[in-house]
Amino acid sequence: MCYYNGQKVTRVEYIRLKQLEKAVANYDFLNRDLQVGFDYNMNAVLKPISGKEDFDIVQMEWGFIPHYLKTREEVFKMRNGYKDSSGKFRPLIITLNAVCEELLLPGKIYRNAALKRRCLVLSTGFFEWRHIFPLNKKTGQPLKTANKYPYYITIKDKSYFFMAGIWQPWTDKVTGEYVESFAIVTTKANKLMEQVHNSKKRMPTILNEDLGYEWMFGNVSEERILEIAATQYPANEMQACSIAKDFREVIEPTKEFEHEDVPALELNF
Image 1: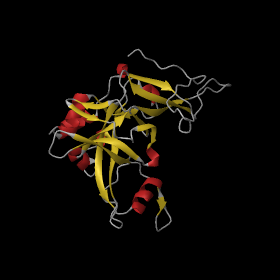
Image 2 (image 1 turned 135 degrees about the vertical axis):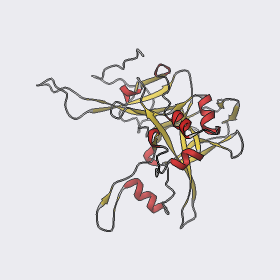
Image 3 (image 1 turned 180 degrees about the vertical axis):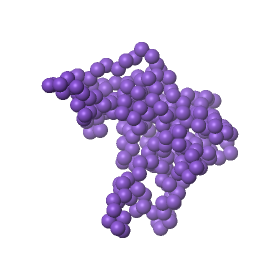
């Protein structure tokens, strides 16, 4: 799934969505090569302005907060897991991504947002793990435990692009804190991403400008929402490079790094 993202846009670039333009010169939060989803930090999101075919670039908390949670303490428990009153451990629930196939299912926490609050998440590149099963030196058979190698994925000839997102307003019922949170929509992996993210074979739903416009502003049916959410960006327009395993700690997390004994990706799409 998509749990790491980059949002580094230079001050001379523009966010361009069909005929709409927003200068990013005054947005000093667009300077991060790496956003770690599990830090639940603020990320740059294109949020439609109600009643207009226009948007604001705002910061939202990555990690969709369900409406039924009443306090930050409950949010913390959801994100980290906890022991209930009987001592039973309740595992964490991850809401960084929203699976496109489940967006509109009855009772799903994402349904209302997918119908009414669709947004675009800005990206300059995202990060995924590739699983490689080494061979047993005695038997020649693959071992049961895989080695994981990180990759950085971008769109060819584009310095930034847009991922489909859904957002949610939330207020702490005790402190009055107000925050807007979001999840990135994911779809089935294309022929490049099924090699990179080869464990779950998923990828973020990346939208071109026309689909991004329709996703944010279109008065679309439920069927069309699901169609757009399931979009697979063309594999031949994407590129991926392996990076250092400690990319989360280094100065240049997106710098290419070649690992020994890792087969090259098949690029004949």
